[in-house]
Image 1 (cartoon, rainbow, N blue to C red):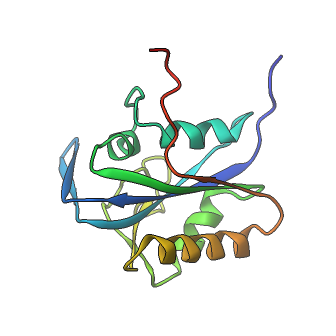
Image 2: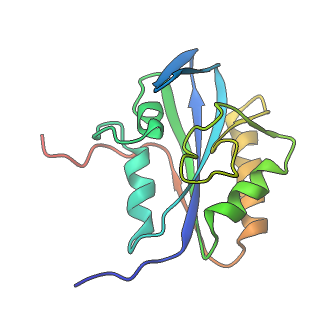
Length: 159
């Protein structure tokens, strides 16, 4: 049985516990300690699988966000999946808020030429405040159907 594609986007809230470097083709991105939000699309038959994959530590690294989320200095706090909302709309909502500061030019945005980045530093001092700000923003953009996953997901690979 083939699933039909669903329009969905998501935002991941993560904590970078210490300074980290993510290699890229022409150099690297350096991320300071703090809270970050990554925005992406999940236009697939079962969008929640994309979100769960990003929350797993043990996974095949395919994208720069995988390097970030699989790092031992990174903790997943929250993932918000917004159904019926494009990545573009969610990106614009984040980019328009002063608390979400674009970082790592080009990160995750190779297929979105008009986007500076898909990674934003959240200008708050604790995880609860970061979660409240992100949830409030996503619920304003998508009040119809939102799924929330809290915390990291254990590996789904057999031992």
